[in-house]
Image (cartoon, rainbow, N blue to C red; front, top):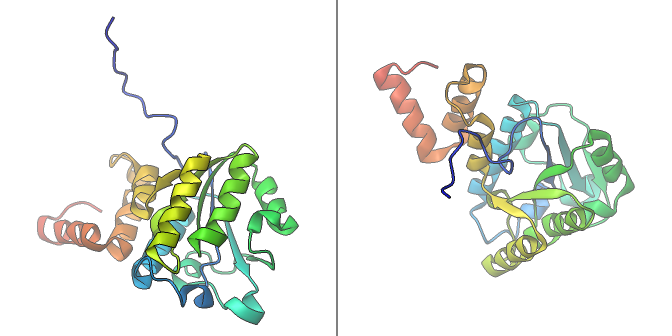
Length: 216
């Protein structure tokens, strides 16, 4: 008996209303020792996540560690998307052990979480494996995370995957939220974010708009 295909997306694909985004410790001091990815690329990828979540109205939590005494401010690429948002500051390296952070997670009430953080092996890994153990479905944006060495980043990603996390990239996140170019209400948002942060893909869109009068 043959299987019959149905024009229907997989349940595992993300949509704007089925998850919350959590961005953890994308701060100045935390970035000093990142060696697994160029920090400019990491900041750009974090910007894609933040602007996509803001534009698609995805509930988002921003968290820092010792912002005023040690680790410094959040990347501008993130705060530009969420001006005035209340950031959860804490002392625990694992945000999932902070009561104020957990209160925000519970207040949003989503069982599916998309998480990125610095460093991959600490700020990201701790909350991811903790959330998975408590029954959450977790996606990790691996190119919006970084660590002191490529191996530290890779081992942390492997550990999270082994625990049940699903790895994605920042551009995948943006395009998965859009998914259908016929969705005109967010077409301009998606292409605008891609042109600003999307590297070669964004340049291609900009070229098409300029040279062939592609509709915005």
